[in-house]
Length: 424
Image (tube, rainbow, N blue to C red; front, side, top):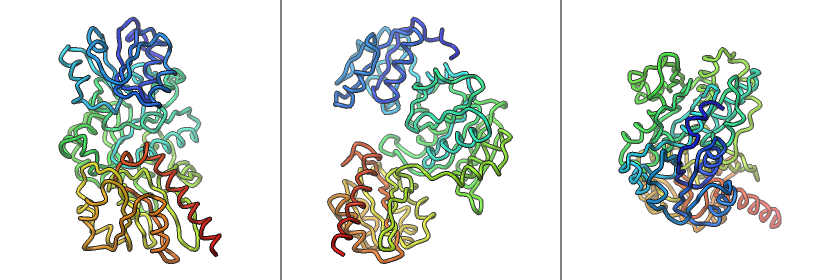
């Protein structure tokens, strides 16, 4: 690692104790900082994380106190902590710098960073960039919002390596000097309107990914989005565009654009694409039964993800949707959904709001849970149909996270199939 003296002997509080907060706190302790952690929750999971902290790291669970903020040299915040929160307001009031976990790891990282953001497709693209780099003979790490925190592995990274980093708008809110060699913005559609007051604020957060880049760096933009094309005039980096090519989806096209910057042939990218089997909960094929295909897209936490799914499925669709609303206007995608979907099945807190957008245009059914939804979808389908679980909402009304939600859906589908087999 580099720049370890930047943190040595500093008093630092990490705000938020989930995966990134845990990794960051232990990393900072390892380079000689005096570390504290403050976490608002006191759940079983939080207590489990607390047990994994170095014993010398001070911690408070179940609430934030001013004591854990004052007289600090630096505050490092986890992405789940809103910029407007009281704990970060205390830091600003006291004039204490606040940075994100990805910035903390970036300061210590000796390798080239390729950072990917966008509303949808970040994890798949981040994974594929790393796989293409590995196929070309380079050593690469896929880190960040993808699931493994940057802080968790930065101590294993050498100067000749590459980091393919997934970054969310939440993580970008508090960067100061973060400067990726290549920044990628995949797309931009409504999301997180429960956190941002409007789309302009959401775009401003995403745009911070290139704010420190210069003419030695690259900004890769999706040409099919006019709002992203206009960002080119605000960047000091070299601009590289991509768009959806005839036999590549936009994520693949973005990977090819990044590869071209690094001198990697498109043919090698295509070899990686052909062997790629996808990621769990992202257009994941669960089963085919009685000529019906079941697809799990639990990661679809906004309408844009569902639009992507519908545009990539050629069969008639039975759509299962719903969860906790994030402030979306579902009327904006009504025409596409109605043109591709024959039946809409609704679950969760948002079902009444979604119903208002579709009830006069599309047959729909309200159900209690995913087991009932899977049964209703099967009963409403015909051979040749696709039963698509693409919620368009967050999972937190009924589940721990989108992974938990996706696993419950898959279990419901497999139980349905067993039941139908027994009956037949």
